[in-house]
Length: 363
Image (tube, rainbow, N blue to C red; front, side, top):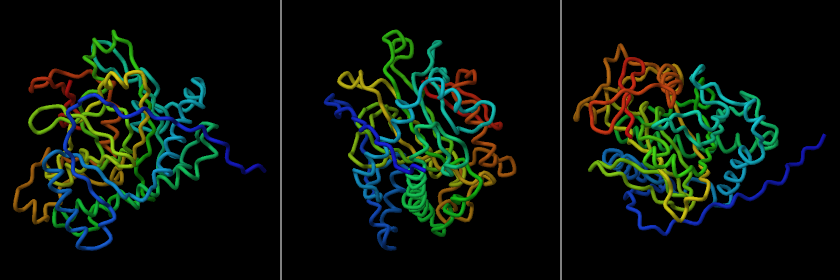
C-alpha cells in the first residue's frame, strides 16, 4: 500500500494592493496572552470593546506559523484546480434541500442582483472530515485537514469563546460547553475561491460580489489573505475595507452569538466587492473556520449575566419562540442566495423571513 503524500503545487497569492483604500481600524488580539488569567481578563475587555464598536478584530499568535498557514492555502487550492467540473458536480452540496453546507457550492448558485449570479466556488468540510466522502485529489490530505480543524477548534475558537464569556462576566466555559468537538454540529472548514467577473456583471451589481449580510453561526475565523474585497458596514454607515495582515485571523461573531448574548454581541454586516484595480485580474482564495453551537442548543440569552442585567437584553423573539441552532442554520443555509427578497423598511436593504424572524441583506 502506497502511503506517500503527493506533492502539492504552491499557491501564489496576489501582491497586496497599493490603492489608497479606506481601511477599518480593527484591534489586534494576541492569543498568547490567554496563558494567564490576567491576560485573559485584559483581552476580554478588548474583545468586548471591539464587538460593541466595529464588530470585527484581528487575532495573531494563534499557533500556526506562516509556513503552516501557507500549506493550508496550498491544500485549499487543490479543491478548485485539481478537481474537474464533473467531479465537482458529484460532490455538490444540497444546501437548499438539506440546510447543510457540506460539499461544493458551485458557481452561479447564488443570485446577487439584476439577474447576475455569483462567480464563486466553495468547498465545505465538516470538522469531522470522515463524515462524508471527498474528491480524489483531497483524500491524501484528510489527516492534515482534520488537524487543521482541531487546531482552529481548540486553540483558537475555544480561547475566543472564553473571552466572550468573560466579557459578559459569565463562567469562562459557558460558550465552550455549547461547542463540543464531538457533538452533533455543522461547524465546518470552508475553502472559497472568487473569480473575476465581466464588466457587464460588475455594472449590473454595482461591483458587489456578495450582498451585505451577517453570518448565522457564533464565531467566524477567516485567515487573512492579500486580495482586498471584504468590507464591513461601520457604525457611521460607511463601508470600510479589511486590511490584510500576514498570518493573522479576521474574527467576527454571527447571529447565534447575538441570540446567546441577548444582543450584546451584535453580528457586523459585511460584504464582498470587486477588488481594487491592481488586483482585479487575480482570483481570491479564502480559508474559513465557521463555528456553530451544537445543533440542539436553544438560542436564548444567558439572562443571568451581570452585564446583561446592567445593560438590558435585546431579544429578537420571546425565549419560548427562539429557534435551536439546527433550525436557524437550516433556515439560513437553505435560503441564502436562493430566496426572493422583498424590499426592506430601511433604505438599501432587502429582507426575508427565517423561522418567523426578519433577516436583512444590504445591497
